[in-house]
Image 1 (tube, rainbow, N blue to C red):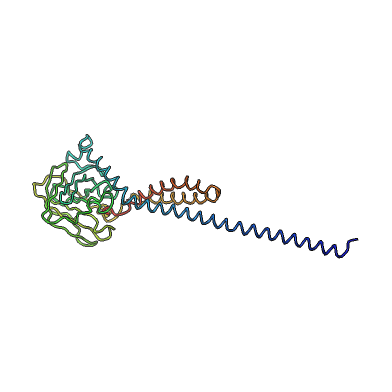
Image 2: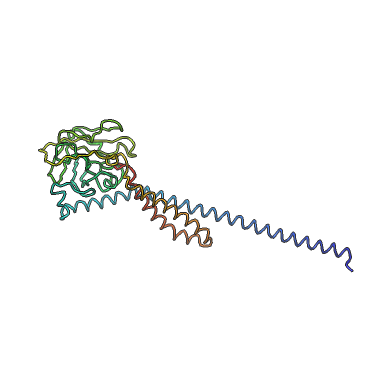
Length: 310
């Protein structure tokens, strides 16, 4: 027969075993919790570093890489004048948008740039742009050339240093034309537009009023000093995005699509971190170049949404 003392001893043993199991489970839970927290901190840190690198890349692209692209584009555009492709601008015909239309020389501020046809953000990223719906340089009317002030080589960064009486030159398919500065200033939105048509031969150079593109437009008006040429006058007014007031609307779809792709890349990266917890740095090394490439592509289109004279 089992005595009362044996029953009590057995109960004590069971209680001790249960306490041991409970303490062991709590210990494992306490160890697992810090590991999970550390993992979450590592993932957040890695994602923040990717976003930080992307932001740095955007700044580098806008203020550095666009200059390299513009310098390369200028060399290519200049070569066009010495190849069969230069027959259009040199023949006096209106070249297609993005093609070289003239050469602008402003000795006082060191400008010697190929002017492209068109003034959207995509075109002024290549060099100063000739407004299509305005007069052509060398003809009766107001020929308008827009240039960037802070990005893409900033060809017009010193435009505000020009003074009345200083000279510049425009060489186009219609000939070589000389100009004397007769007026400079800054115009705010709603004021009289310096790009308005006139009945004399002149060129108006325009850029952003400040480095941020938010302080109106800085302009310089040059009166032609030699005989004007002849060309057809434009029939339509330029759109707002052709006047340096906004970015290129054609870049909006690509910017949205690439932004979604970039966000999806970040989501997949986070999922990869969760699945391959023992290989976080491997995932980081493999995913970061892809994300940065997507960001670079995205920023390239976002840049075109900025004002075309910034």
